[in-house]
Length: 183
Image (cartoon, rainbow, N blue to C red):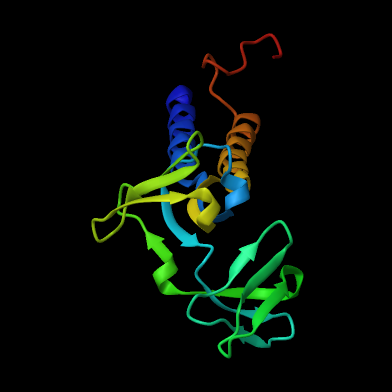
């Protein structure tokens, strides 16, 4: 009987672990570079920044070409709607306003990153095959291992099993019961 209870609890833990130990996360191109990833859901192109909101809540717009992040210099570079060149330091930016045309959604099979070629390939939701160089990517949304959720999903049930084993009195002669020698 006790074996069945423990086995059932451990099976439930295993199922929860497999289902909930990942989350869809927004990853920068640098976080992806050199690592093969699982299914990629969304890619935002680095050239699709239509504006930024600064920490002061001021909005800054770019012309139709959009802005582009220069990661090396840590700036967003673009042209204002009136035609003047602009450079905005990344540490002053609260968020980026992305043009919807610069966001690529993959079909249910998702996109894949090839670390050797540094390309993200896949099929969009409207059936078009795409190849995107990683250098053109602002961020991707992909499944990522979730350490906190994994710890909770494994730790809580294991603690419950340990408490159950330590507090329940088992009948005489059972697998873990008192065998008459004090143990």
